[in-house]
Image 1: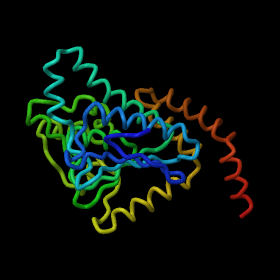
Image 2: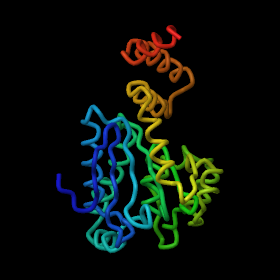
Image 3: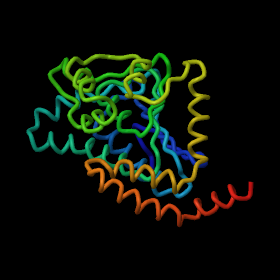
Image 4: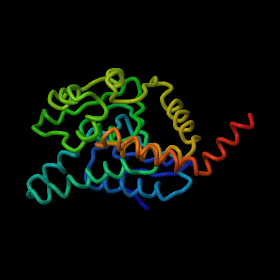
Length: 253
């Protein structure tokens, strides 16, 4: 598909989605979100893809929502506003249920909706100079949908502070509070990301996909229900070709 606001490519086991509005700091509008979702679904249909890597063109990952677009929609009435918000909300759901791990590679700033998009990924890798935050409160707005994910990533009190103070934090602070996974040096960032992605892509595709599905499926379960779900997936995983081959290789050592 000929995308206008993203770049999409598949290189072996890795699908790459790049937000491509560097002149707008990769600001999000309905079109770029729709294109992102379409590329994500395309990656899911490709049996060779094992990891989806998300990045931003230019200096920043993503500055958040396109405010001009947001202003236009907000004046159109509640129904259109809900429809617009649902586009992003549905994308978060698709990312959560996607069969592949989704990795955000963040350089520069990931703010507001851009921080939300990164948070919706399964793993966040950040350059040392990267910055994260939810400054929506400063314009009387809130990061409403991503709260469902943010409060699962950091403590409830830290999430409250981030969304009500609009604080911008460094990658080091973000890692310390559990907001992101890894911090790499600016100079070696691209190489470190490629190495990390390659290592994950080399893992059993079925095991990684089943693990992702189970981990998120446990949200809201009681302890007993979660254990039972684990029992079922344990048995299913044993029957996969990847597991059978892995056990055989181990026993031959």
